[in-house]
Image (cartoon, rainbow, N blue to C red):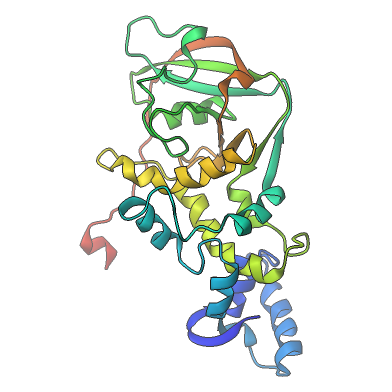
Amino acid sequence: MYEEGSDSETLFQVLTNDWHIFSNHLESTRELIDAFCSTIFGSDEKNHNTKVHLPVEYLENYGVFSGHTWDEFSLLIKEKNRFCNSYFRADQFISFLSYSVRKYSRGTILYRARIWDTDQGYDICEMGSPPPGKRRSGRVNPEGISVLYLTTDEKTALNEVRATAFDYVSVGNFRLKKDINVINIAGLNDISPVLYTSGLESLAANTKIFGDIAREIAKPLRRNDSPLEYLPTQYITEFIKSKGYSGVEYTSAMGTGGTNLAVFDESLLECIDVHNVEIHKIDYQYDDISPKAMT
């Protein structure tokens, strides 16, 4: 399936990072891959250093973006053709969705936070998605379209609204009224080649793309970023919505270890309780990105 190429990844990197077959944290992993590669190449050399890449025709024939990268797809969405994207192959993408379904059972409690803009906090009836006319675009929803953004734990909810020291925040507890199926975006990049039955060529051609999508949807906008940055992930999530799924799940990038859940139809949940909190302390963690520190 793979071809040798000097400008590519090593076979060891492909097997550990892309296919998730072996753990790169185990001391025995390299020995195991050496033995595996020796069987293929007929050599006792350290073949995990052999550099390989997928043939271009595999990416063109099986890639969900017709051989294009996530960055190329994003640029097309933002600057050239927003609604009729010629790169996106729906037939290929659909084949992966059933392998990344996550079920949330009726009665599950999820959380949503809102920073006060009054001096009294919010009632239960005010904890849902914004009313029409105030629905700004987000990583899942285009502007004007309602999506209820929730988290699996309270701490993540507070971090996702970027509450700062001395903010007052209302936290709503939402209960699911029925079982729902959502697509776990990060899970698309973890589909096992043992379970996937639609062809290893297709899975190999899309592992990097799915990783890019997972990172992009988890990435929060900075204050000065344009809402246009959300367009590519909105395109993907709107397609998932069109296939009858109730929402999408994705990893929080706020360092809490929690999970975000965006539900397309907020009537599937009811807010059963609201309590108010005051933020006392924010622990800033940072890296030095000045040119001197990066050399």
